[in-house]
Amino acid sequence: MTQEVSVDSEKTIGFWRHFGIVAGPGIVVMLADTDAGSVITAAQSGAEWGYRLLLLQVILIPILFIVQELTVRLGVVEKRGHAELIRDKFGAGWAWVSVTTLLIACIGALLSELSGLAGVGALIGVPAWLTMLLSVGALVLIAVTGSYLTVERIAMAVGAFELVFLFVAWRAGPGVADLAAQSVDIPATDPKYLYLVATNIGAVIMPWMVFYQQSAVVEKKLRVSDLPAARIDTAIGAVVTQMIMGSVLVATAAALSGGKTGASLDTVEQIAGALTPSLGIATGKLLFGLGVSGAAMVAAIVVTLTAARTLGELLGYDHSLERSPSEAPWFYAVYVATLVAGAAVVLSGVNLVALSVGVQVMNALLLPIVLGFLFLLARRLPEPYRLRGVYAALVGVIIAVTAVFGVYSGLSGIWG
Image (cartoon, rainbow, N blue to C red; front, side, top):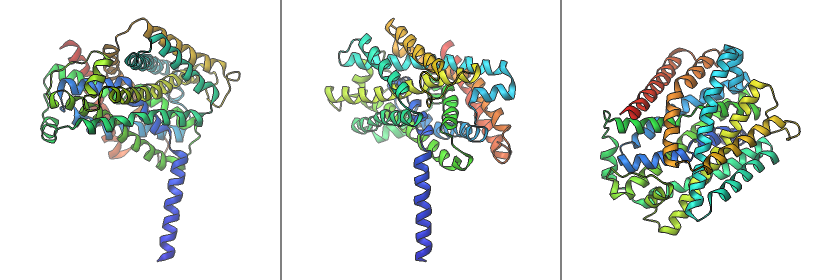
């Protein structure tokens, strides 16, 4: 009996040691998922509807896992990036359709991240030009001086600052009775509510996440034997990102008149003010700034790398972080140019909240293309990794409902 326990313990220790090596792509992409735009979306949801969008955050956990788990399968089995795989399976024309969709989403997301950083800078009196200079400089330095594993570790460390929102939610002291009652009070026919449903769907399931995680799995050289650990990596990330979204929503709803609805937040300063009454102005600004900065920085790394990598897959230039700038000049040139262009747009005076909410709705409207290709590719995997049977039908229904509802809610919110 003692020997059996010892063997089981060794197996358990061995598995978690293996998990520590494999983990990264899922957690990083999920931390990036809770980006500056998502934080703003969650805050807007709590401000305008109290806790009525909290249940949606829970429902989106398994949906998010199901979608991203397919990217892990594709990466470890096919060992090719998403755009490259679409080109090989469906032709160059469809590959460019998917990449165009991706680039629109990446540009929108990057503008949202950089705007979020500029908003945090404004909280502490740093001018936008200096914030952009420091942010772009740090992001370029991270990419050009590190390997894939180095960039992954930096992204995880920076993204960990998002966990401060859990503390903020706890300190906000949400009323349990209000939270329980409003969570199941769903005004499903209200166009304004549907608009924020769409923004939340777009904030959680983003086109660039599919492309990034598959490319990261390939670049990290994960094998089929790593699939169980990679799935756990993705599941942990899905839970964490939705806990952060829920925390921002709860903290905002609780801070604004004990969860009463109807408030509107139009600037980062107003959102920070709504989240900080129970913490004090100085502490509140510090925690909010750390949370948004962590979210924005890890997402900026991910979306910019995704754009540069995916173009490389189709145009044929080297697109690996394992290569130096002299070995992969086009990859790093696209990366730097994207950041500089994004910073220039932000300095032109874009409205952060309006941009962020609009980007999330745009993501929802693009879901049919992204999720459609993902499903079709998973159906073409070799056995035994192919999406098939009852689970394939379930995934197909979830993807279809998510995509259709995202489009319907987005259009309802825009036209309503």
